Image 1 (tube, rainbow, N blue to C red):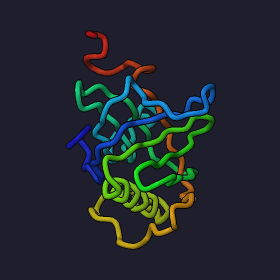
Image 2 (tube, rainbow, N blue to C red; image 1 turned 60 degrees about the vertical axis):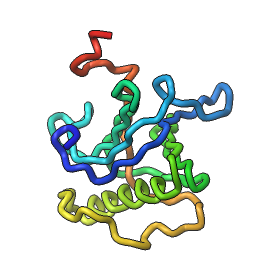
Image 3 (cartoon, rainbow, N blue to C red; image 1 turned 45 degrees about the vertical axis):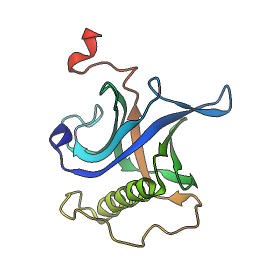
Image 4 (cartoon, one colour; image 1 turned 180 degrees about the vertical axis):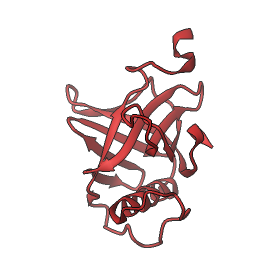
Length: 164
């Protein structure tokens, strides 16, 4: 559906980034609730290859706020039932979910993709992640993947971005 790829996960969340100058988390792209999906698509770094991508699009104006290609090498942290975050090189990104159910859905979808990548099968053939493979009492989950991320605000190369 989105970007020509099958959507594995769709949740609503506020996309956040870590502001080291203030020591806190701040909303990306002016804030507001976003649709956050994990799908098979092309990221700016993929060079035409189709990868699993995490995309955030703000609900109020459909502005892209985040896009991450899922690759190897990430630690995913569950801070509480509705706030999870991950680190990419020297940047941190997070999601404040609308409900614990959305957070669980996102984490399970991401874990399912990690499992596919670990098995060497990146085909989105299995549409639902296995139950019970993400229990960890809220501690960091070492997923051994990497997310290459860009902020929609910084790299305006898409369709209507020039017409703001």
